[in-house]
Image (cartoon, rainbow, N blue to C red; front, side):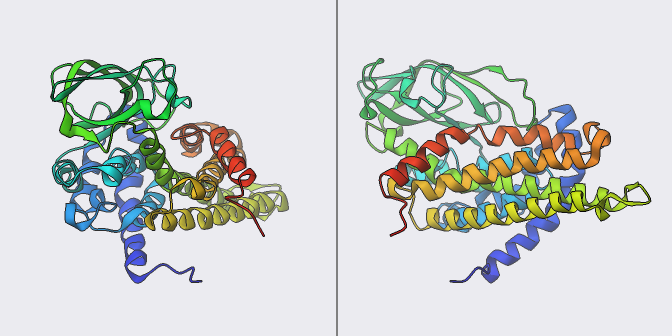
Length: 388
């Protein structure tokens, strides 16, 4: 059992770490304050090949896989979870296409993502169907060689910037709760009837627009159906394989927040010494450092499992543990870091309040912490996770 990164992954880590320190860190506060999409960082990621990390070489990527993307996102998220989200969006919408798409779909839609010519979004959630996926109402009706889509998707990251969307819709009865009633489609932004609705005013992770996608009699060619009719399992496989990538955003944020607080504590004088010399502060630091490393081990294992194709039902507990634990650690670390700075940490003079606002999103997106706990518990009850 080898816990060391390969030479290639270690080089990737060092490269992205330097890039994040020099290019991403100086932009973090401005991105948050303006809420403007950081096109300069997108172009930086494009020019350095990071947009194609997770995609296979035959589709224009570098083939570093989910583990490679996880490592890169961890480094970027130390300074900006908005920038980390930009990298995450190279895999979330492309995941179902990678898993079940036709060769034609992969060549047409994945290659432009890898090269940075296009961006994509993922449409699963609806106002009344977040965690309750089968409650979705977006409808896809077969009409000759097309499907006609009608409905509204919400809380979609990158909705304004995307050139195409991976959309899940009901191909069965609208009120059906059967898993085979949901299917996946590739929908191009330029098609008639596709429009962006309202965009959300977010507490954190500002700079990548989140909002509604409106579908009004959108005709989708049958060749843009991803896999087969009945794609609920595809949605779950796509999300399962994403767990370590979301977890990486949590690890990076936790590391960034703790490092920021430690540097402050080493300089802040109180009661004749620095607060870093105080045992109470040291215990907080030690506890968080331990939890961050535990989260990293869970996450790297989950990423390797996903790269090995182990993201079907029996592996869900391990993948969900990574997402659950790493994102909860991010919330805890950002809160403790702010507390270490005290009143100063609550002010925009310091990044701790930014870490604090950004962290909470991670326990909600792509399966809440409560959903993850339910999946882990079910895995234990069903003996997918068992110890004898």
